[in-house]
Image 1 (tube, rainbow, N blue to C red):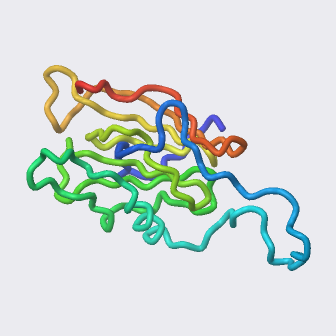
Image 2 (cartoon, helix red, strand yellow; image 1 turned 60 degrees about the vertical axis):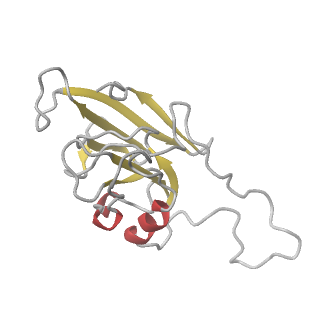
Length: 190
């Protein structure tokens, strides 16, 4: 550990809804135990494939159906998530934790973004239940840990140059099947 490898210059902040909050994210339990009587086939499995063959684009399109809208219903003519334009180079179906950032069609600096989290190709949810703007930096710490530096406006900041910073880490705990969040999110009034 110690040295961080930056994997993407365009990864965006987190947000849409909901499976992951500070307490973590419940994931489906992995099948375990002995194979049923008569199941002696070598192809019988007790756990999902640790490296699915799905393309990153396919995995993101499937997961995007679970994203809540980027704006509340009272925002007229609100754009949708631009899933087809997402940078999927950060998705890794073999990693303990990987991500894909999604923003809205026609995004500006302050437009909402969502960081979609995956473990071994399985969609876990988003990094936070709140949509944040201002492209954050996402760094891989290790196979199961990501560090996100969120940016936000301080008094007097121009939209193009937010000076505020909040750092969060997300770790996939394979034993519990949960993503554990530590650190900070941007202030809600930012």
